[in-house]
Length: 254
Ligand code: ZN
Image 1 (tube, rainbow, N blue to C red):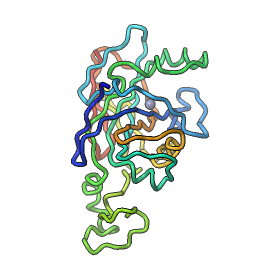
Image 2 (cartoon, protein in one colour):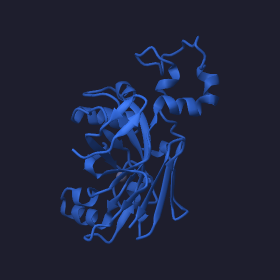
Image 3 (cartoon, helix red, strand yellow):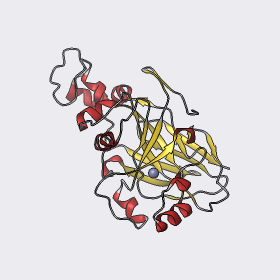
Image 4 (cartoon, rainbow, N blue to C red):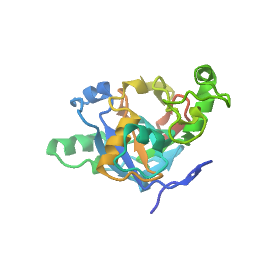
């Protein structure tokens, strides 16, 4: 298996599968002329398509319309099956900013025929990710304000909502703020800019739903869909994306 190594303080993770959600932002579904879905629409990329930030992406010769899609990526920290949303949230241990590169012309052809999307979604470096941020580090980073509410002090005990089953600091299990925005610059110009709050299915709901389909394994990654503003890339373009408070992801189109 050829995949990336995700090194964190909690160990090194080897993604076995990359699950992606389609049409998870209403405005994006509409911009492509799609209905807003009732259930999450999942598709997969092989883990060998993964690349870290800084990747150079070749446009396959059978496409004349490669698009960027900037997304929040979830890192799963333990095996999960038939999970509740609370269990799902606990299993999400980190986040990255990701680029789900898509051959829109191929996807349109395949969609018209009712065929699977792989040819549009799976190619080398089609899934680019930034460095990962552990949830607990994110909490420390963004919680200087929230600490007034959640008390970072040792004596904290009012923990129904966030403490989970583990006897750890309450802050460790806080998910990323839905006020965080996904922003993409192409050659320095802003092309995508929308808050995570606009996701139709939020991370815990996505993971819980997926875990009812199949076991989600430690190290698996989940791309959670893109906000509106997707567009074509051209040779020489430099993409720089960021979900606020996470690392940047960059890529160059060859
Ligand atoms: Zn996508």
